[in-house]
Length: 213
Image (cartoon, one colour):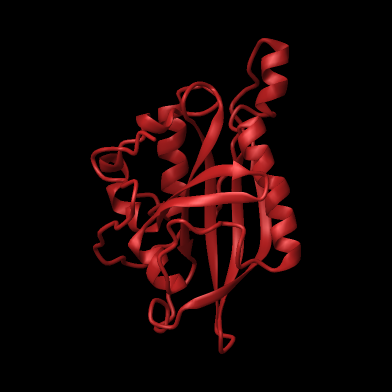
């Protein structure tokens, strides 16, 4: 048997299945029941402008680890200055060119405890062909005993990779009137630690009834 996928890998597999060769799935095509095992580490962003990617919802494990309700906050807040600038540029590629974005980041507590996370951010269309939503998943690569009780206050970007599910940016594919062979890359590391059960508490719930706004 193969190794168990972590949350970012599992989300990518599901997203790509629903995408079915298009630039991105529609927001309302995402069925929470199909990713029930990773919902506590899943989040949804709305692109408000180039500097604001607002959490519309966030899984309970993420909220516990970062010590607050993430819904309504800006994904770009809390990063070091270099990381924020890089992410602002990278998220434009997600929304304008339908790229996937793989991240490795470090979360730190006030007393300088640190833990590494892997994250995947993937585009969704909403209200037509415009990409204004991003679905993501984030999971710690290790589970120190204090994680979830000692809140993470800062984030630092360690590594990033843009993923072109069809081999090159979607805008270039459209101009060429064709598609390149699938050539996606996903994080190689798999987190095999056991996860506790969860519930999702958020406003536009990722439950059985997707947010239609």
